Length: 465
RNA sequence: UCCCCUGUAGCUCAGCUGGCAGAGCGGGUGGCUGUUAACCACCAUGUCGUUGGUUCGAGUCCAACCGGGGGAGCCA
Image 1 (cartoon, chains in turn orange, cyan):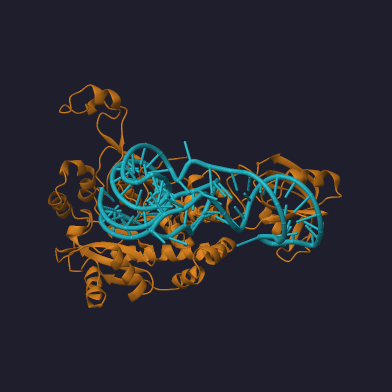
Image 2 (image 1 turned 60 degrees about the vertical axis):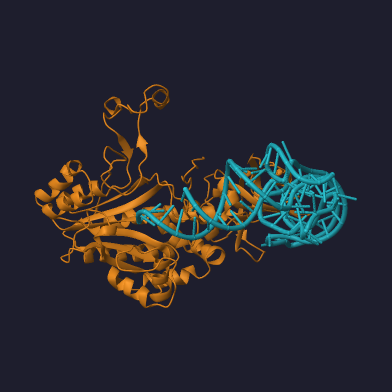
């Protein structure tokens, strides 16, 4: 007989029909004449209750040897439940223990575990409610992101993971090499250094920190594109919102200025939030109940809201006018710190805030310079709880200005020849932004540590599993 | 990288001014019950992160190291 997923079974009309389910046992409760098994197969947060009557010879015997964590297959009748916590249940006719899980050594218990402990058993944590729910939300969002762009005529562009330049300037890079490091360390003098002409690519190579510059190439030909893939940063960041390897979504749109860019970012976030609320209802209720009380209401509010849009100068004014004493004093020209972002989103505007037109000194070379020559058309989307979730900008599309800015920032112009070429031939105003998938999942689920919304997180000193 | 906190049973944690190592959960055994964080009784479980120091005596005090967490910076 074909296997029925638990999600489907729980939604079926219980008319005594025979079905087969398979999955992992969450708990077992034993009575004299009856055994109750809670089984989960990942298709939903809810378990299915399997009722085994002891007089029923085969299932009764098998049920005895079943423990928490065992994998089983059960065939039986789907019937209305007599209990009060579920509407349907499976009355077992056949029961098979597929893989046992000795109770003395199985690391997951019925009780609640700390996330810190579960991180150490990343191979088993998807069997918990929280990590199952996170995995389903993550999968939903990934698909919804593609759908959002595909429905709006964006082309999905695969930008390279290995790059031969660190042109993005977005952070520390992981080096990719086939040179024999041990031999280098032993042999050559420290002054000589490695001979990169002998390296795999004939020059130093790195893992990408952003697909943006490559995406700009395709936007300069195909109008609107997006990338969605892994990026790598070798920064020694030890926080609840940084990873060394993370997936990033980067749309890039031609004939689009900073306002169009903000419209896209805002619509994107609101559409995806509305989607996760409507399509992941059961999991979202779990997060609302157990992880971040009130998150459903707050996300619903955001889906219907209009994001506040202010300039950097206005943000500085607002912060200076407040009576709050910040650890880092605010003055025009300094970058906004976490405490400032929190204050703006949580205390002043009570919701997402888009800040634009930052001083050029604290932003990347490729952001379009404003006429005041002091600020650039960058934009950050700040949200309560997390701070910066999106960073983007209108790109500098004027050849002369871009070249000047590259030099001002002390970067080697020759490395950017192809990037400058885009401004030489058919240049066009264009904009884009980057959104970290994991941060967005944090925002939607209320999970406080980014290492708990990524299946196998990579962080400084940690590449287990 | 910096600052703060922390490390005791399988898990979560208590252990006071230094004096015999504890609880709950989980596990085992038995009982009871259409149960649902099931319930009741009994039983077992420790390199107190590691190394060194102070002391008659260290889980407790000191130092170094290792691991974990939070905050900051960098950013998405």
